[in-house]
Length: 354
Image 1 (tube, rainbow, N blue to C red):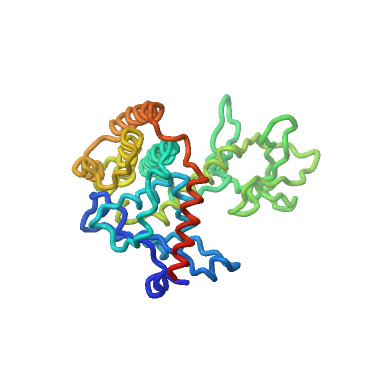
Image 2 (tube, one colour; image 1 turned 90 degrees about the vertical axis):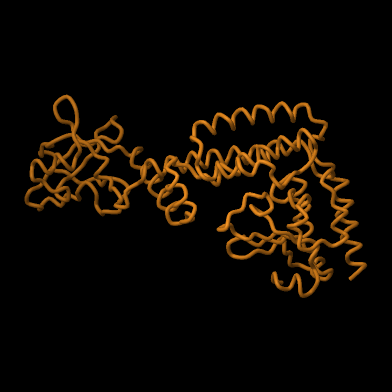
């Protein structure tokens, strides 16, 4: 089954424009997101192959099968809950049966974690982006040699500098472990190359130093340490940074750089949107999708506020939300028996009409 089949074969229960256009924070460059709900044909529902959802490659268009939709609603998933309260100008299709799915069946104190918790993750994501922008990782990857140091006087110097000062080649070095000294080695050198020393690193892609067989009467020329922990942290940071560079949205990154505040402004905008929605759910027991503070949110997106200033606002908002949910009359979690009853009833009626 494809997305086109949903409409041509009349399996659609609901469809709406979602995202920034529903929130009222859209710009001329905003994506056109679609979300919807469908019901599998009866034979396929009872068959072996389940289709929980259908989407395009970018997930700009996503349709949830009814069971998957109810499961996410019961978990108080923000992106799915908002489909129950979409502005009318965003609704493209609504089957009469969809009216039976009421927000009050699902809203619970779980929303504190799903809305505010997700917002907190966006703050952490913004912090991570801030770190990546301020501390870029050079494309040329360091090797283990950059994390090796040799004892000199009362301190140490980088191995590569120490070797260069003496006109020595790492490939003609030999290492042996020093007992009871973690990641510390006696360093030997063979000018002739006849002793078969394996070097400090055997290959440029090696992730650890290599040991050699050393004649018993040969004296070391130095003592070397390898900061293995530091090298492993670097490798993770390198991989994370360049994976992020490859995957980042170039338009959003250009916006981040242009406003000069070194955070993902769009993520921060959604952080405050989610925090506001969480507070409204706790206070009023309602999902309010269209945002009344569009101008404030767009100022965040434009990078008009300082990063630390917004973190302070967010922390204050989270503290307020915790109080509101503690005082709220919402249930701790949805009544799953009632959820199941509505789900089963909808499916039975749909198949009876088919």
